[in-house]
Amino acid sequence: MGILKVIFLTLVLAAIFQTILSQNILPTILVHGGAGDVSDETIPYKKDGVKLAARIGYEALKKTGNVVEAVQQAVQAMEENSQFNAGYGSVLNWEGNVEMDAAIMEGATLNAGCVSLIRDILHPISLARSVMEKTRHKYLAGEGAMAYAIEDGFELLPEGSLVTENAKKALDNYKNSLNATKASDACRDNDDQPEIGDKIFGSPGTVGAVAIDAYGNVAAATSTGGITGKMPGRIGDSPILGGGTYADNDSGCISATGNGETIMRYNVASRISGLIEHFGMSAQEATTIVLEQMTERFNQTAGVISIDRNGNLGIYFTSRRMSWAYQRGDELHYGIDKGEDVVEIIGEPRIKY
Image 1: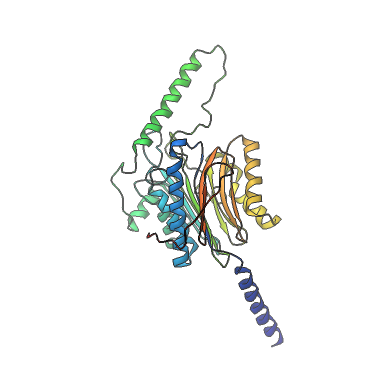
Image 2: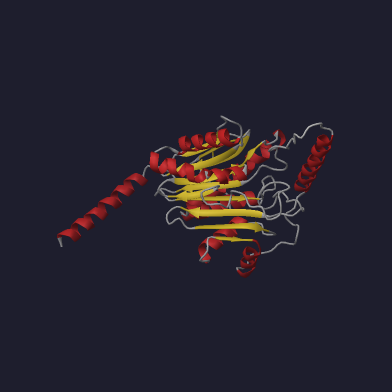
């Protein structure tokens, strides 16, 4: 009987301690709209897009108290925006088709849903959540994922509905650049083969969101159309748990954007999570270290948004630009250039989703 009393008292004290800790965490939603060489003329649209997504996500968080709902709603707002490389506005593969990837994860139980090679569905992130909550699997791709989407009642848009004129132009520019490179090679007297490098054709607008509630529950979501001119069937880092997306209450939540082949090889999200959990680093410290190490080792760039278990934010990118925004209380912060942090006081959100 004495042992039971001790166990009961321990549980009570643990609950009280957790409540005290949670009082210091302010519910927050943080989003990104992609890292890369964002053009000057698109900056206002990118900023408006991430600001809107942050507000929608924050309203969902305040209204439902559900961090998964918050990140999903934020990402869906950007999937509907042609300024971003996700959903409507996704870049095209070599054959001129849209193939999308997405992942969503919650940190309390490490439950997750991932999808790849998704076609003609406006919100791949919604399909990823359905996989997480309604199937015994964590990852569906290709024809199997599409068959499940139909079975679950997802609306399939007419073929080509997600293809934009900007995406078509980007694919044409990419193919023309390859032809120009081949012509240049033919004039060379040696065997050096210059590569196009990592110039981005089309929007560098992979989208993502991370959130934390007052009790330290976290979630992350990422959605993308991939890279212009990719081979059909290519899958990037965004739907890879520990690569481009991760959430764990013991560490925090992470969403990455940038060179997908590099991000997945370096396990960017996993490394950031490990530094937070095992070395006590803040989200900003861990994010900065991992991205700098990745860029130095591979000479490739990326960006990350993160929130650690204590509610600290991490926003960092080694690319030229990354659009981002977050809402915490009545403050909305956003930026796109290095060192930029604009603050708007907006009060309670009034956006309907």
